[in-house]
Amino acid sequence: MLESDAAAWWQLRAESLTNEPLAFGKALEEHRATTIDEIARRLREPPPDSFYLGAFAGGKRVGMATFIRESGLKERHKGRIFGIYLSAAYRRQGVGFALLSTLLEHAQGDSSLEHILLSVAAGQHAAQELYRKLGFATYGTEPGALKIGAAYVDEDQMIRRARA
Image 1 (spheres, rainbow, N blue to C red):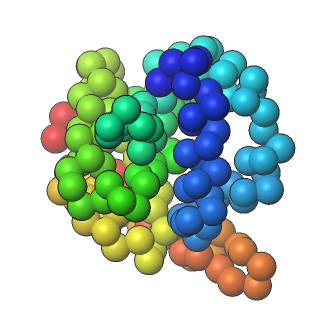
Image 2 (cartoon, rainbow, N blue to C red; image 1 turned 90 degrees about the vertical axis):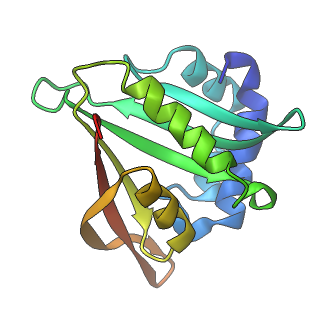
């Protein structure tokens, strides 16, 4: 995604946090405190070897995903996928698969990348199915990873070998 996509990215992120509050670590209230200018800066200046992708249908932004490469010397062999979201009307049509396939292809362009990690709420079965189709496997579960009011959400930790 480009800096010029900041307003659309901000809106789609707000949609994701409104429609799927149990699936994300950020609260809608926190997102609302983030300005479009801040989003534009992030899109313009991502961390090294990191990037944001969008999915488009009919000229509309309908999906997003973020890849962040670890920067520490001992963790540089890993990257993480964050903020994966696809508008409900576009699910189960191959759009999410295409978005994440593109992300994986781009991330794996760096031969030093060995592991790609992501977290997914334990109850997000369709998302977990998609990730498994793309070669991810669950390696653990963090109980109570998120706390929303008095409720807790467990998160499954998933990994994909970059050369899978």
